[in-house]
Image (cartoon, rainbow, N blue to C red):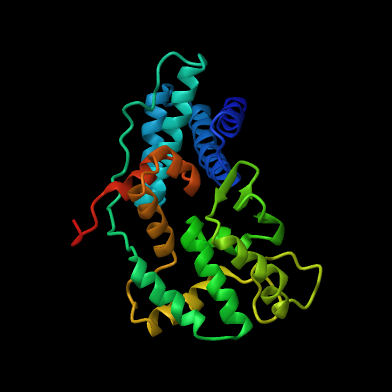
Length: 281
């Protein structure tokens, strides 16, 4: 099965253009499934893939994974076996009727354009190097919908000022509008240097010690601005990403294009942005 998994991952990388983060998630999920199936096959009690996959699902429940994690692992298994059938490696899909854990939907938080301007305005009120950095981070998140982990992992070389885009990895490039280009150019040439102590440091966003800003550091910063802007409870680490996605759909971007921009492994993750916002119709 290991060779089949590698063939599937190559298919996702070459034909589907999935990001390295997405491929890593598939690899981990499928390696866990393959190890379980191999161990059960060695026992010789359950021989059919249907039975082995049902046992695998029970094992996930026993391990007390979150419903969302279990659902992702089942989705990975279904995608893999669908590939196995489509590529002629097996005749029937043993995961076709495997029940998927039902993920309880949480209401997504979105910022209206005026609310975003309030949040951004709190950073713009200050002239410190940190505040200037924070304003650029907010602008970049709102314009690209990056994950927080992707934002803080950016290096200076990931910003393509000529192409007005951010390169996340070799497979995913997210464009931003022309208005953001001069903001990023000024940050790279001037404001970032006010926090730089070691010229070999490649991180785009630095903390006050000149090191790469962390996820936790970013979240503490944003919570502070949200509180000052009167948006406590409305801003989470994902709010700007959600706002970007909803805005793109409202502007006519197709769902599969939005999936690529967000780096979602499954289109089902992108469909949630089509649902109406409670209280807004």
